[in-house]
Amino acid sequence: MTQIPDLNVKTTKEELMNFIKEKVAEANAEGIVVGLSGGIDSTVTAFLATEALGKENVFGLVMPSTTTPTEDKIHGTDIAKRLGIEYKEMAIDKVLNEFLLVSNTPEEENELAIGNLKARIRMALVYYFANIKNYIVGGTGNKSEILIGYFTKYGDGASDMEPIGELYKTEVRQLAKYIGIPEEIIEKPPRAGLWNNQTDEEEIGMPYEILDRILYGYIDLHMDAKEIADDIGIPLEEVERIILKVKNNTHKSKIPATPNNR
Image (tube, rainbow, N blue to C red):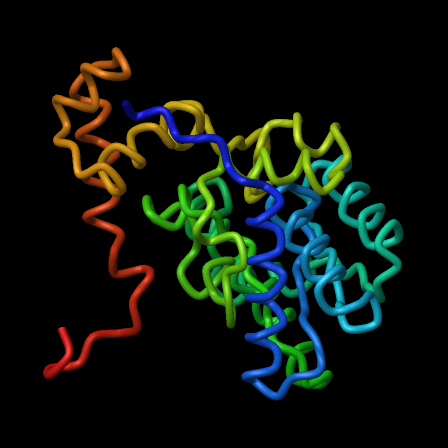
């Protein structure tokens, strides 16, 4: 029951490309900026944007740090070259180190805060180039990660639109295969590279295939935790843990509350 139906990849691709065109036109912008991490989500977003707008209207930023796997940096630049889009590679370590020097922050004791800072430095750069080019920022978040808050608020979660934000991670993989994303990008472990040896599924605590079934059952089918656990065959506590993440992280996807808009 919680198995997500196969994605209509042809229709989805057309709808997402139209969405990108509409949002750029609504903003009276001239194009889109995409941060290229070398991962599947940013690569799919860049492919869709390039086909929707033309390569001359897409700008990519590759922003490695010392904790970025070399493979990811290479994939980011290779994708930009393959698409024929303008891009820049800008290491963020000098900016990061200025923050750490001023705050006197021991990196090993504040791994999460420093990881979030890296994401926010990258987004500051993305918005800077969007401003000077009269472009808008294309987010690269998928539905799975948005729902559980697996992103940095005002970091990789900041954008002017989220083209793949209604696709679960497993659906992003289906679309990636259809539009011709290189197999090595589709198959490598998802990772943000915010600290050494980090992987997304290890942080989340389960494979995306299981996470997506939990979310699909809870969000789309309105099933309760026990029904989901029984259907998938996993401990009830694991389902409840994910549902709690969804509830606790809704604030990350909303504009800041005001007294009359809570």
